[in-house]
Image (tube, rainbow over all chains, first blue to last red; front, side, top):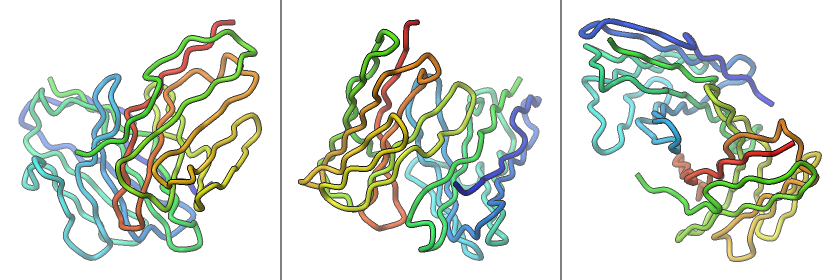
Length: 117
Length: 110
């Protein structure tokens, strides 16, 4: 299957700092990328959808000024958690949706465990 | 956000047993996807289904796209310890939006 690379896999930061998470599609062009948040023992909750070259679409209740998403190319999307607080600690996962050749399949990155002290 | 009903929520089974889980939706989907997630990792795609009634296998895994297009089933035959994990279904009606199931937590006893 297609490969989506997500970095870093784990990050610990101080409260008030910003953290950037990268999501890359390695062997296909991702027309759309998605960012999720997952709490322990729960399902994935969609935060936002980004299309290359346009502004991200945020789900209800997700602060766009806090979770900045940039999708500058067809293979890279970034999520920046600005002024992180302990309640932002969570597992963040990206996914990428390819073109018609991948038949609408969603491929996931390996996730980023964020811990804010 | 919206989620699909997935059952069972969790199950403990003996190694060698078969496993069945399902997902139901109030909406019609035209694509169903099944994923497995290991702790601390992202979900890995197992099977994709595109047509009502479609039955697709991937090794010991078999999934079916329900005739009503509102449900899907995943079966695992002859389970082994490495099958442990959380299984998620996901559906889409062709828009960019994918709706995820609540997950089935599988534990296999050797």
